[in-house]
Image (cartoon, rainbow, N blue to C red; front, side, top):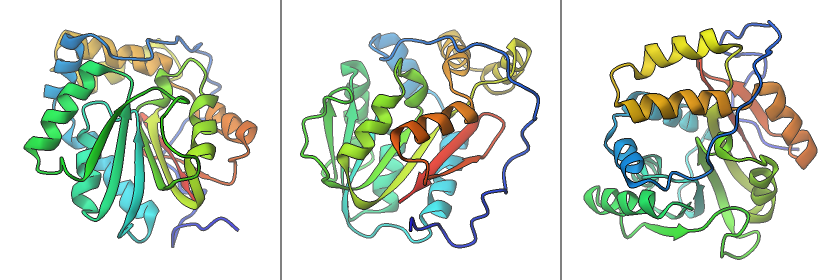
Length: 241
């Protein structure tokens, strides 16, 4: 049986309206290849949402991994990767992204934060990652799912990369019900950011999947034993072993 973290209650979720979601998904670009876009993202302050995600990571892991090989899919500028490396200093982490621009900022961050020896950066896109099959003790991915035109590539990659009983933690945005909610979230969380980040946040909200869509993806991939939970007014997580 899949192991669940102690005290987990599948029914305990952030308040989520039961109103039928009608806004259609609008896919966005899969990669952030533009250097100005990557720079704006790398220089932005995501300490609050990323801190929240890592708090839930700690909760969902129950006990933190003390060693082993992990992979971060869609690492971007490696802000979350750096947090994982510091939280679990004995992990060996492969951090994968398809954007050369993002990886330049990721390398700078890893060196600056003193975890460059712990993390190996890999330029690749899923599912074409140059690693062995079934070789990772844990898989992390944050804010990548909504970029994918075919979301099943993430779930199939997880099945290919994960060892038996590997720990999984996926976090992403979920799509609001309508444009009014999109505007409200952009105003609440990005109004003080650069215009490019406001635009990207809006596009990402519109490109994100609903919880029901994510559950359907997991069922199709044979991963519906994983836990799903809404953790904020814009984030959901998928986790388990």
